[in-house]
Image (cartoon, rainbow, N blue to C red; front, side, top):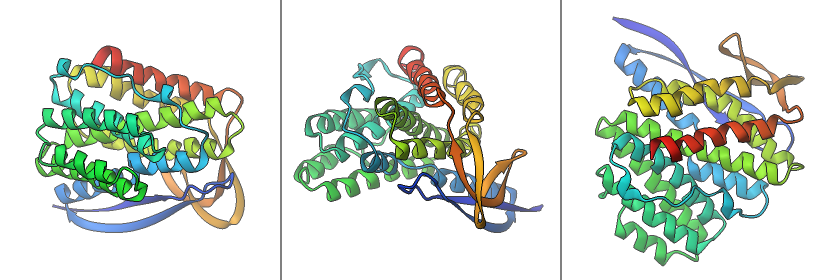
Length: 296
């Protein structure tokens, strides 16, 4: 049986202006159900910013590096479940990119060692290992080369998980990266409440969050992941719903989320009320704390 479906591929254009334009590409696909589902998931995967993309934006638009926002150092020997490992690997991948982008050599080396150790726990030693660390060490003073190495390694990890049918782990890798990325962005916004560019990055996550939930709820997880990560992430929609969408220019096409569907619309901006950013930071911090206290 063949089905026809229209799926969305989002290109999030995060500019320095106070208005973030969303460009939409609509593509029609006709294929068997399984192929269609795979295409949708692939579209969702690549609509969610990678840790490198997120941290580059934060570096360009944000204040100085804040070590206090990094995920706390933990004892990796206590982690045994693969789903927990994948989630933490996503979190630390974001921190690794954050430290690397700001050229913090000590933090970069420490986080890289943790990422390598985590990768071993889910049989990814062929993707990231001591050879990867040596390549980074050799390019420690060449930020562009380091960005390429770390970004390529992240997607190699993701692709390796999916090629081995570990789609749940790949989804948790992306989920962990998003959680820590939003924590960094909202934390930096609290530190610099006048930074409108950081607000724009956070506002864009209102749309990214919808894609993340579609991805994360496509697979089965253990009860800890469901109760302390997936369910709170779904409930996070209530927080993003507080962000008002204002239409600005009838001559510019973009997308909006309305009546549970994405629609072509006009140029828009997101309006934060007093306290919204602190609420976002507080709520994402609770999920992050769940990783520390309930997952690890």
